[in-house]
Image (cartoon, rainbow, N blue to C red):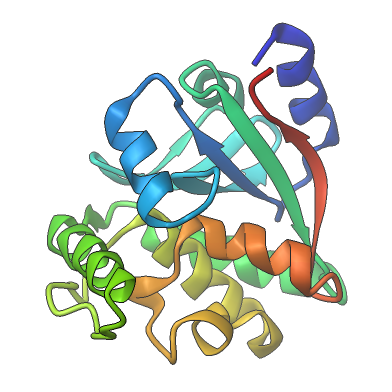
Length: 190
């Protein structure tokens, strides 16, 4: 991702948007994207001017967008089709409620196991997910559902399990259900 792409992302992103990313030179990031059958391995939410909220190995926390973008090589901004600013406020308030929570390493293992078994036609729940720790896509999915039930990704993608919503579920949803989400800007490797 070059400097102009980063500038476009910062200029085009709005409070309440979702940012999908992948650090393509990081093998773990590439493995997550491959298991998920899509280009992205991580999701965060735009919480304000130059501010994102994400769940990473350090737990759920705020970070500066420009700092966040320096770590990633591809990115996509997705805009939920909010009915009004109240829904955006509910989304951001829900996200803020998760800040300080721990990262769900067990949930990540269960997430991986789910996708390995799914490849063989076996469907399971995330057996290792914690109630009080969260993976990146889970924080965003849970917060969106609190903004409005129409955004409940667990209903569309994983039979009611927020722990199994993936970064690429947001991407696939923005491609197939443009009434809910639309892609604002996408940067792929050249």
